[in-house]
Length: 214
Image 1 (tube, rainbow, N blue to C red):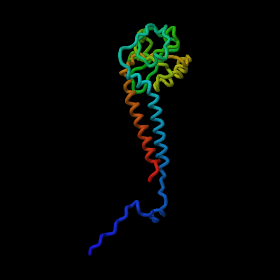
Image 2: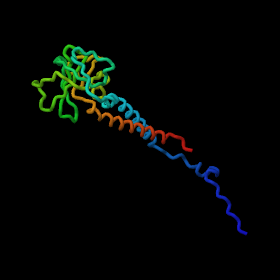
Image 3: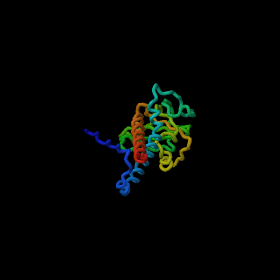
Image 4: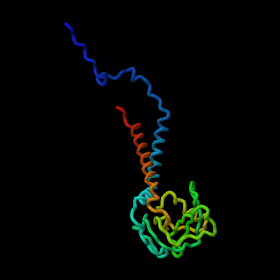
């Protein structure tokens, strides 16, 4: 009379294999380096994404610029921070500096508004027009923001003005970036998404490496 084969125990139902338990713990010399790299990447990416939040928020604005009139009489409030405005003023020569940025052929001039040292204007100078004969405009349309919150591109601008122009920029000074409509700052949205993705991927990698294995 045929007999049934004995049941095969499930892998989880067997006792721990003593031979496997006797094996030494595998060495992972690069594990700490990997964990440190992931943690550093997550932190730096999150910091960069946070630092670009101002440009990203400005790029989402729509509509026409707000007319603020004479910049010499303008005393911006917090409600006007990171807004698109239009104004008129003459720029002061005292403390004005000229500088350039990598990968850009144009240069830039930064100068305080005449009669209003708490407001500075950055003007783009097309390539080939630099020099003493350049006449800055007296009408400006661009981004109005406190210099302290202008973003990474302007983080060291106050120190540069103090070193080159010999003028101390107040901590509460405001900046009007002429010729920068919201649409021109949409590059910040892509960078914020990229850095946020790097940070999320690194955090997920840390979770996968540090989670206990059943």
